[in-house]
Structure formats: C-alpha cells, structure tokens
Image (cartoon, rainbow, N blue to C red; front, side, top):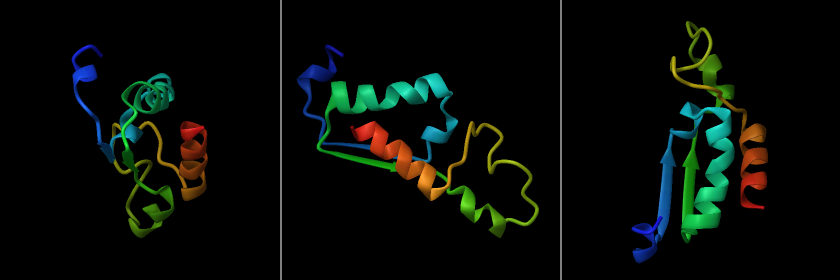
Length: 84
C-alpha cells in the first residue's frame, strides 16, 4: 500500500472480474476498495445469470472459471453490503 499512498485513486473498474474470485477473496474486496483505496467512483460488472436462458446449449456457468453467476437481486444485495 505504500506505493499507492502517493496516488489519488479516482476510479476502479471491475469489468467481469469478481465472478472469478474465490469467496474469501471476494469478501475482502469491499474492505480493500472502499476502506484502503477509497476511489471516488467504483464500477462493477458481472454476468447476469438471468440471461443464461438466451444460451440454450449452456450447461452450468458461462466460463469454466466462474465461481458464481448472480441474479440482479443477488448482485444488488452484495453491493449494498459492500458499500455499508
């Protein structure tokens, strides 16, 4: 963190990344992002499992390395917990 202390972090973008994190690492993301880095803007995207019906041949998750794929409600619940 000493190196990052010299920089003003304006934004962090997680573009289709959090679904690849193991649960214990995912649990630490809000603490690091909001507690240590404190950017002005955070953008998080993740696959919406509700759209998987559009892929009729899909079995399981969209990518072999996904640890989860959330509904919109599950994503919102995680975000509310993350920012509080």
